[in-house]
Structure formats: C-alpha cells, structure tokens
Length: 367
Image 1 (cartoon, one colour):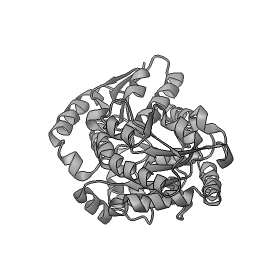
Image 2 (cartoon, helix red, strand yellow):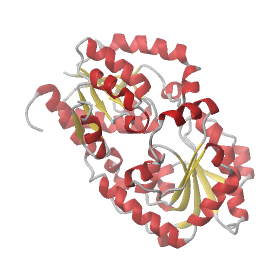
Image 3 (cartoon, helix red, strand yellow):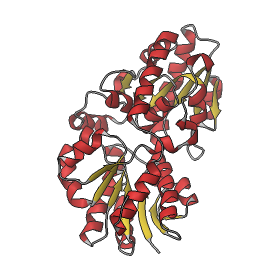
Image 4 (cartoon, helix red, strand yellow):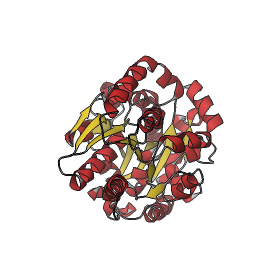
C-alpha cells in the first residue's frame, strides 16, 4: 500500500491536487496521503500538517514575515516525507523546491505536478529544480521544450481545469449572458485586502459611465474576512460560486493567476488587475522576463486581456477597460481568442494522465 506525500499551497493547487489524489486512488487501491492541502484535498483523505490559510501567501515581503512558521513546518515535513513512497509537489515552488531537494537527497522519488513558472521569473533556478526532482508533469504544452533544455524529464498531461464538468463544454455566448460585472479579487486574505477596495471603486465608476442598471457581484471564499457592509453599501452582491458566476457574467475583473485561465475557459470577457507590496513588486519586476502577466496573453503570445498592474490599477483606468469590454464586438473578439486557449490545452483527462504517468514512473510498465 503506497503512501504519498503531497503539498499544495493555495486554493487552485488544492483543487488540482484533490483531482490527482482521486485519480491515484484508482491506480493504487488503498493508498494514503500525507502533506499539506486545503478542504478539497482533505476530503480525498489527506492528513494535512498545516492549514492552507496559514501558508497561502504571495510576495517576497509577505513570505518573509512568516519565516519562523515556514521554517518549523519545513522541519516537520522533512521528517514525515522520509516515511513515504514518493513526494508529489503541486506548484508552490518556494516551499516545494526546498522540500524536493531534501526528499531526493534521502532517496524519495520526487514527481513534480504543475511546474513552477520558471519560464516567467526563474530561469536561474532551473538547474536547482533539475537536481531536486525525478520527473516533471506539466500542464502547458510549451513547458516541455522549456524544461527539457535544462535536462529535466518532462511530460505534458493537459490542464486539470478541463477535468471540471462545467468547463468541458463550449461556454455560453455573449448574447446568452446577463448584464453582470463579476469581481474576482483572489483566494488569499492579502489579495482581498489589496484588491477589494479598488475593485469596488472601479465598479462604482463603471456604473457612472452609462452602466447604472448592471448588477455587480463578487465571490469571496468563506474563510476570508471582508467588509460586507461596504459591499452592501456599494450595491455589490456576494455570491457563493465564482465559476458559476463567470459562466454567466457579461464581463469580469479578475486578479492575475490561474483564475485568468478559468475565466477564459468560462468564456467571460475580462480585464486583469493585481496589486502587491512595493517591495514585492520591485523584486518581481527585476525577475520577470515575460512581456505579459496574464496566462491568457502568455499562452497566445499577444495582448488579448487588458493588464492593470500596481499603480496602473486605478479605478478610472479599470472602469475604462471594463466599459470597452461591455461593447459586444470587443467581448466577442475576446471570446474567440479564448477558444484558441482552450484548443491549446487539449481535452480533459489531465488528472488521470498524471496518475498513470506516476504509476509508470514508480512501478515501470506502459502508460
């Protein structure tokens, strides 16, 4: 009976990790899981060593503030991973690459699922990744060539978002959507704190620019704190399901990250925004080598989604981008580009493909 050590550090990784765990249980009857994850991974049987809300932080300064907690957690993980049959890191590179280095040094196979985005910000860390893992399972087709140039054995398995039943089919057309603006500030407390106020102000400005009859809604994870009174005052409705909202809203304002890809697969025209601390932003600007930030723009190699980052993310500028997207011709053009993104990712089955590949890598045989 196999025991896997699996670590995801934020909400999208938790969802993807849970689907992989479900698929692994089909490959290894009675297998067990230890590591770190959220509600979705716990529901699949994970014995989690930490709460996702404690470790789901982003930014150099923000991580540094929790250095003591991360150091203690790393010690615990190093002890626990030694008794497992394999370590499966799920994205979350700052923590997972360090733990991978230790796991491999003591002979634990390391099969990394959902690659760190070194092609964007960390080419110098590729050699470190190559020395720390045995195999890399990637979710974007262009990643195979990138990582193999550093001697990393890599397999493209498809993107697990397409394993979601709601995202498998072609999404509703513009004509089938309601006049709704969806605000997606993020799944971390620090993102709510940095994004919600500017998103609220941008929505108010959008309404003043000829969209007074539009509904505005936002999805906030239940475990996060937000000023509901301010949202009510601004006539912004809080909804329980982000994906259901993105499938039916006419336009959206979405923070950067995997949520951009999800919005595109939902067929929701959107603008992207992001704010972080001045220190984290300054460091990131020196590290990031790509022309674009949104995954949609990166995959397509051109500007399709408006990007409003840091000081550019002002209510007036955001409201203008949203007003532009409310024009049917521009919204339709974005939707057409989103179909190209869907085609690039292939079809459903990423979780099963990853689980089968893990079985082959651990036990041998055919895929």
